[in-house]
Length: 136
Length: 77
Image (cartoon, rainbow over all chains, first blue to last red; front, side, top):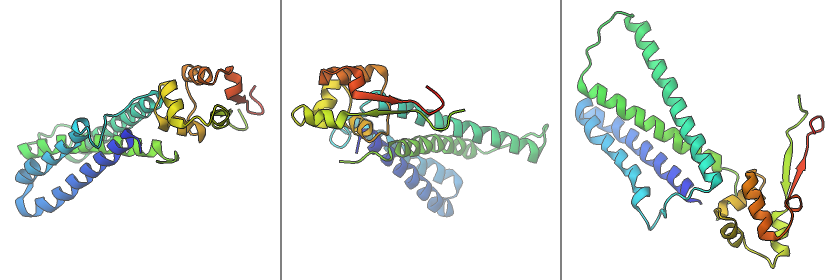
């Protein structure tokens, strides 16, 4: 398994763990504390960049670079679609001239969900694009 | 409109064995890519850039057309 694939699986695992922990914590702590504590788990995605034992660093030859570009494009495409979808949904539900008052946790949570979405799609695309090549 | 996509076949696996059973790792190091890219090339899952194609051909000391073979689609030469 290449370092890029390891990164993909690791990141996907961290995003899945974060979402699972969020769902579990929200029931007990409520949105504010759950958002603040659980999404800190996303910091675990930085481990591949610092672990020399298990991740020697993502090696980018031309194929890896192509896969990384495609994965990045897929991540931001999905983010953009979600962003436009949410904006349009607010327009249609609340109306064009409505004023929204949102708690701070909702703003935080929106940013965290966006980060999770981009990283999750990037990781999944990386794994899918590596599919079909025999492993070690 | 083409009837099917053009394909680039390669003879990397055979050439490795013709060159003293060169390993994928050895070829990868000499061509400046990862072994996974050589594996993807041999499996037909990745088409290399022109630069990489020339590098691989140079490793084998062969002209590029002996390593890579272009098979045009029937209606698209």
